Length: 214
Figure (cartoon, rainbow, N blue to C red):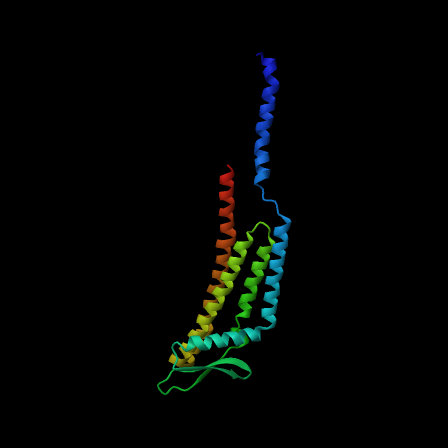
């Protein structure tokens, strides 16, 4: 075989070798599918609508909160009963030992709606991003909403306990600085959940998929 005869073959091999990485790169690139766009849009619309309804009916959310908190406070109080005070859903309780009744009103400043709506909105924005795994977005959204709701129940119970145990000084301290700090930690925790489940988890999933293709 002469050098002249081998030259075209070598050029073809070099061209094929140079084209292979580009072709593999195109194969690895996730192409948004119409079904994913439609599903993400539908879920985002549902999450946005839920967040809007929660904000519009925050008084209804406070009613639910007060009902649940009455049961939670009953774990340490002598007596508890759901009540209405100044047109606000309230927790009426007594710690016993001659202590009188306390009525904790669940006002708009204590409403969980103002914490849940932003989490739902964040979930909706992630759902619109076709690069994010839709299942992970839903898991993170549900975890964030459930976590914040439970955390607010803990805050309300702590306020009632402090009031019944240490009086108004305890009430103002737990309702103010401690309660605000607790909810800020909850918001940070919800954002961390989105990062770990949606962003970081999605990167790991993509990396594993690429490793299998290699």
